Image (cartoon, rainbow, N blue to C red; front, side, top):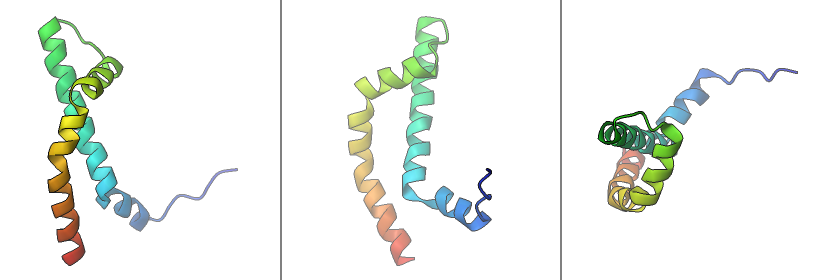
Length: 80
């Protein structure tokens, strides 16, 4: 049994959600880390290794640095 496709406005809502935006930003940072580490080591380390390495080394600081930005963006969205 196939589920009916969601209406376009639901997809737009997901793309505009702050959670989805944070996911995309975090993914972009992981991809940057993958590229930098792969260049440093001279071979492609793969996404999974980059993900685990980035989580261990950078995730907490990255999230902490984004908290004020995320809170301000949420406030602006609600006001606007």
